[in-house]
Amino acid sequence: MTIALQAKVLVETDSLSRDEWLRYRRNGVGGSDLAAICGLSKWRSPIHVYLEKIGKAPPEEPNEAAEWGTRLEPLIAEKFASNHSDFAILEQKVIYSHPQHHWALGNLDRMIICPKRGRGILEIKTASEFLRHEWDNGNIPDYYYVQLQWYFFVTGLKWGYFATLIGGNKYREYEVMRDEEMINQLFRLASDFWVQHVLARNAPPFDGSDASTTLLHRLHPQAKNATPIQLEQTDLLELYFEKKHQIQNLEEDVTNIENHFKSILGDHELGIAGNVKVKWENRTRTSVDSKRLKDQYPDIYQECVKQSQYRQFSIKKER
Image 1 (tube, rainbow, N blue to C red):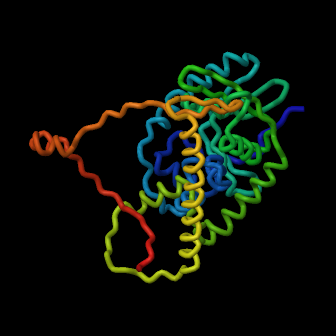
Image 2: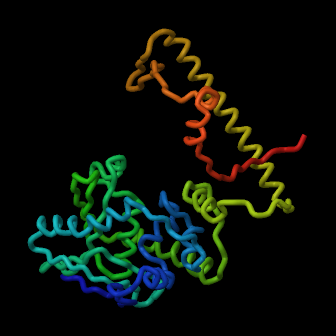
Image 3: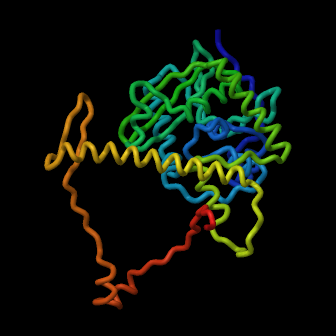
């Protein structure tokens, strides 16, 4: 039995400017938002998605990896098509919406049409060589897997592929089937996020992810007011000191173990225990003696000095 497309077209994107396209994306939750909402994204957190939806997110900085991903997309699609001569591969520049839940959006890379199976979805990805392990042995990164499952929900379709170029020279294909249980979980999480946060204008909290840390630095790159403010969360501050103390104790335990093995290795570089290698290697570090450079070559030193502003965070108890 062939599967028909059930989604509605929210807007055709071919003639939209980037700002117009972003405004339409604010009308709902898209596939690239799901990983962040679920806490799976390395690059975005729930608060980042929230700020994007209400139009308060800081402007995106140019990203060379994203640019080359866009440039390579047609070539990867062409490679996939050459491997599947029985498929028609269509690029439909639209944003789809779910027929009942209009806030559920999808911006597909390509549509597949198979004479026997009907329509499917093709998602095209690029990955650096450093991330190859995430795609090895038939694996698909979770942050991409949930995106395709969301597109299955939006469109009503049941099968698709990832076509992935790794390191610029390693091509991989992965077939994916609709997972109804996961889709139900994704719908619940996305629906709660859309209703309880975006529509209610109730910001989710910042979490401890690198994505949240980066976002905070972009939102508030420089302090503008030196007047102290009164903080109420004394219990949270006490928890902070407790956790810092636990970390300090754990770091001391780790150092004790390291020193134990250093004492055993002595003048040896390498020790082996089962499948574990313990190394205490000779290394050489090359650095610039900045004090000598400043004293002996002050003009050159001044030419090479580079200043940058940053904000340093600390929590300390007054004695």
